[in-house]
Amino acid sequence: MSDVPGAPADLLRSLTRAERLLSRRLGAVLADDELTTEAWRVLCLLADGQGHPMSEVSAEASLPPGTLTKLVDQLVDRNLVFRRIDPLDRRRIRAYLTARGRREHARVDERVRANLADLGVPADPALIGQLDDLIDRLDPTRPRDHADATGSRH
Picture 1 (cartoon, rainbow, N blue to C red):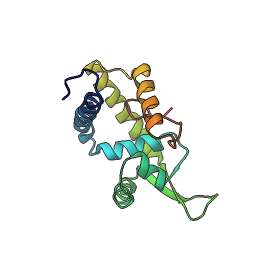
Picture 2: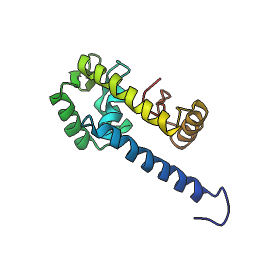
Picture 3: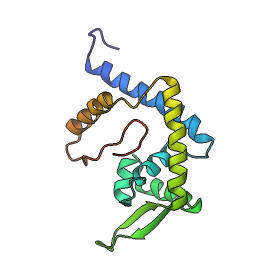
Picture 4: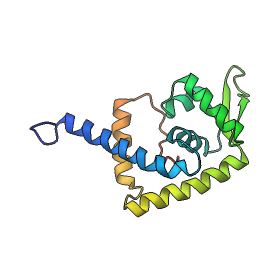
């Protein structure tokens, strides 16, 4: 893309290509469970058990609010997610995993991790740290609770 190795265009191209290929691969794994990568992102965010405001879920899943609402409705219909009014701010709705959603997340997370391990792509903490540092520099308002390569939060 550039005549100069390491140019910003090379970084953008590499990150974009890696994200697309990883999403395609994970999409194939998730399809067996009738999940999309967007649904997987939502389940992974909610797996921490804290419940999250829909606005936060929308941002973390990279989905506009209307699209997220439809997706969460589908997850509610599958008994994977439930919504409650935020006890501290009754104007906000928080989303949580159901007991079935927690079991489903754990089961699918195992399959995703195994698939990545078969590919020889471990959840490399150094790479994840570098990417999180880059994201923090690009978006200093981002919460500091980062996700790993499989989408699991820590």
